[in-house]
Length: 67
Image (cartoon, rainbow, N blue to C red):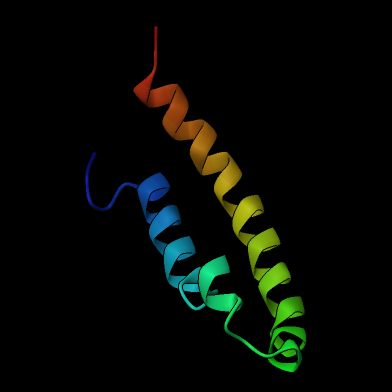
């Protein structure tokens, strides 16, 4: 797959936009107030990422698993 493939690029953008969302192990160390302050932003970002990545994932699946 080419580095400039548009579907691959979609996932690079998603990774970049979501890299500040901590994983569950890190969130456990946060205060309740800090989690509350960021949780809406994280949810919105995750919804955006799923919506954005859905078509790219389907495109990749079609191209990579053609029969």
